[in-house]
Length: 70
Image (cartoon, rainbow, N blue to C red; front, side):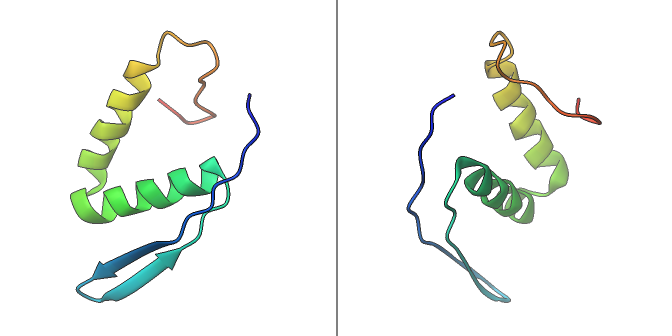
């Protein structure tokens, strides 16, 4: 596994206001991306998209889904 950091400043404008994010790790960036995807497309569409990503990498031994995962 590689070690790196992310330097990003993400600003999102919603009808209700705005949000700002500053992820520093790939995990934080992923959580932000999933949050935005769910808000924009809904939970079922987001789950379908995420399932497609996992299918793409299903042959890799390094990817695993934790307890309660699919």
